[in-house]
Each structure stands twice: as C-alpha cells, then as structure tokens.
Image 1 (cartoon, rainbow, N blue to C red):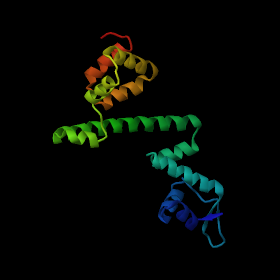
Image 2: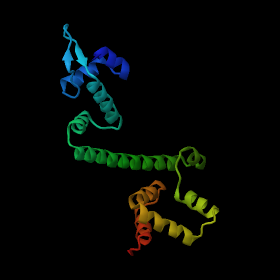
Image 3: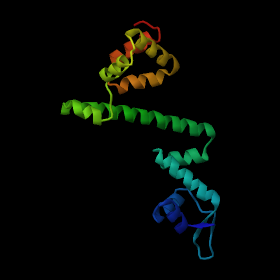
Image 4: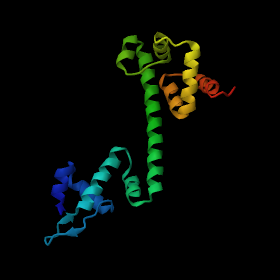
Length: 176
C-alpha cells in the first residue's frame, strides 16, 4: 500500500493534486488506514502513472477519465482528436514562425529557426542530382503512400494553399 506522501514523492506531485483527483473521482484510494489516511494499491499507483502520461499528451482531466474508464474505441477517438489538434497547433506555430522570420528579414535566422522553405528544399534535391521529372516522381510517390503527410510537408515548407492544391492535384493524377 502507498500513502499520499509516497505517491507525492514518487511522481513529483503536490498533495493537493492527489486530493483533487480523489474529489473528482479520477484517482480514489482503495482503503483508509486506522487513522483515516488514504491508502493506494499498486493498481492506483499504475493508474496515476497513466493519468500523468495522458495529461502530458495534453488531454484534459475529463478526457483522461474518459480514456481510463471508457471503451477502447473511446481511447482511440480521443487520442486521434488530440493528434489532429496538435497538427493544427503545429501548423499555426509554423505560420507564426515564418511571419516573424519575414518581419525580421534576416536570412541568417532561417538557419537557426529550424525551418526550411521551398527554395531550400528544391535546392537540396537539385544538388543531389534530381531533375524536375525526378522531383515530380518523388511527389507522386509521396502522395500515393502518405497523402496527409505530403500535405503537411508541403505546408511546412511555407507553400501557399493554392500551390499546395496544384502540387497535390498533379501528383495524384487529378487535373484542376
């Protein structure tokens, strides 16, 4: 059996956090000592570890409870929704990053900003000896194998929506 103090120490949480989890029914002790102290089994210890992993992924406490207490398909649905939210957040952050780099107007910052633009990518492919047709074939294979990832990649290069749509159209064999 574990006490609140042991859980606090093991997981680096505050006592009030554990009391709150108990209050909302997320993590309840399995027993009480003679003195009335909360006691937790290995099962609750493991549940707390799961709670913290799901919280770290950005799920709300309500979502964590739903994942831990719900059906398996509920877990997949919630995690897929969180993944989509993260993709949107990342996309928004990339746009802000490019905007700030543009406002600063300093080419040297592009190297330290961990961002690549279309011109840099095409330059790398060209330096590797790829022709326009090779690059076209690369896009076709990328679109065929991983269409959503292909879209995200094109967006990460700062390619505007209209051009992304054209690239995706000809790389999938569709005409616009």
